[in-house]
Image 1 (cartoon, rainbow, N blue to C red):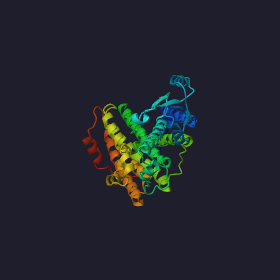
Image 2 (image 1 turned 180 degrees about the vertical axis):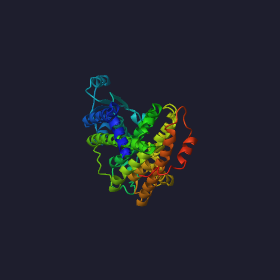
Image 3 (image 1 turned 180 degrees about the horizontal axis):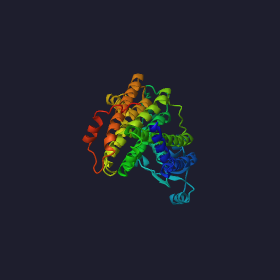
Image 4 (image 1 turned 90 degrees about the horizontal axis):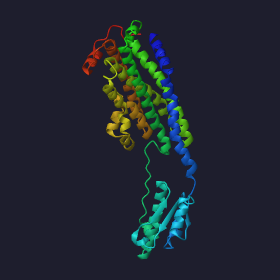
Length: 404
């Protein structure tokens, strides 16, 4: 089939380019290195206890404070002597911090911490422990039993379980989110390349030569399939690199994916890609140059990532009415469904219905695109309006246009 020959030519043209090699391999490796090195450094240094000298002028707070911080990255040591001498030790790197507790701490409710750069989490632990110790001292001085008050005011423990995600960790749920974003980025990236490819061939009159050998439908479908194959290859490389890094540094695996997710995610990606790429091809066929189509390209780009922009709401209420409605609106279907399936138990009929709607929409959009291609690909000198593109797409089909 001529369609497959066009697809093969487009695939080889892109896959052999230096730009494709850089975008597919080198950039993900660089991003992985920059993202992984800080995590590795943290892992290597995270277990080291931070030694903080405590100059306790009250003589009563240090023992209880030290007890409360047992098992944390902080190791407290009692300090005596001159504050300036202790600060010199801190500057020399012998200590990670110096905590000075004044005699009037019960009245001022303030202490001084000298440090060379302690992490915020460590400081929070120290602050919480100090608050507890000082609160108990005040309660005891006022005649109250701190342990009895703590028992009466204990916080309620709330365990939140999202239906369909029992026993799943945050790391497990991160896998579908990462896949959804990765798939959508890949589809939009290749769609953008297709957009500029159509305009370039159109302005260079190359398309006129092509149309002497293949039909507009075969040319359009071949280009979409060729770019789709390169996009799948790129996604496979990106996903493989991301998985290796995430698995090594964060312990994330694919075990959290259900059978339904494993079987439907590829379908959502392929159909989502065909939808996005077809929109890009339609817009490219109607533009006289890349600059003229930049705004419309931005519109095409924003459509499929709207669900990702609304991920906060989807996470909190994946079964909300309008969120479920998004699952059946084709431009939003792939990302919305993948995100929802990661968070809640989506009924089987919703998954099936969304896929059926997506297939029908993609088929009708491709028919529309074939008609736009026939007219727009040969129009030079001006960009088509959306009204003109619409009229081209709904015109009666030529006999046998979509046969064989």
